[in-house]
Amino acid sequence: MSRSPMPANFGDHEQKANDSSSTEHRADAEKAVGRNPHPNFQKVQAARPDWRQEESWHCTKIVDPNWKLGQGANDDGESLNKKHVEIDPYEAGRPAVFNYKLLISAIIPRPIGFVSTRSEDDATSINAPHGISEWALSGLTPAACTDVKCSRVKEAIFSVEGKLFSTQEFESRATPGKKTGVLAIVEGTRFWVREDALNEDRNLVDPSSKALLSQPGHF
Image (tube, rainbow, N blue to C red; front, top):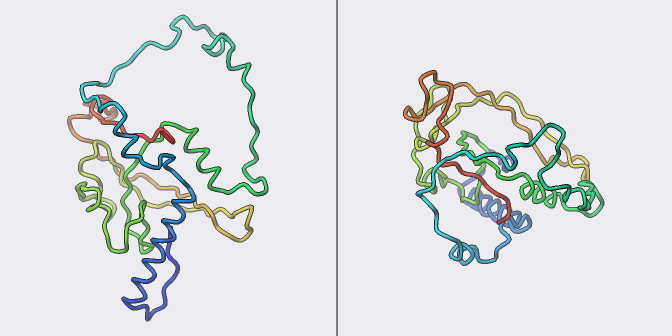
């Protein structure tokens, strides 16, 4: 989320007031989104099984190893008996956040990427106060890059240095003139791969070396 332009004589007092207002605004936005459907997530998590560290990467057979071209889905036609609901994302009265929540619950698992930037907008992925580094909050270690000034995550097995190529803003259909989304195209300029996870040809990363992270929607 970008901040509004500040006047040249913007002082510390005004800065703090603006930071507080921006943080509160983001907090209110998070309440509207309602990413976490559980009122007490710690209680929900405590009831779940422990993390199984002993489980490792492995491959399995497909559902039906004898599947033939044209055979269709592996559910004996059960899915054909289900009805679908048509949703117009722009229908009158439908909040835009509903479309967001629908997508993050349907497109799963969603890969997680740690993205470090150098921006005057002071944008963050969480409701961190102005001047608080998310590096410190996460406890992760910044490592130097070659082509860009931003740091990469040293703990990551695979990292990409990238430079912004272009952006495309999108206007709200419900509120003409209001910008509600931005598509950013980033050019990857350099890869970083942990040595013990890379093959000799330097073109494959061993999947068993990665502790894969994903967001499986509202669980």
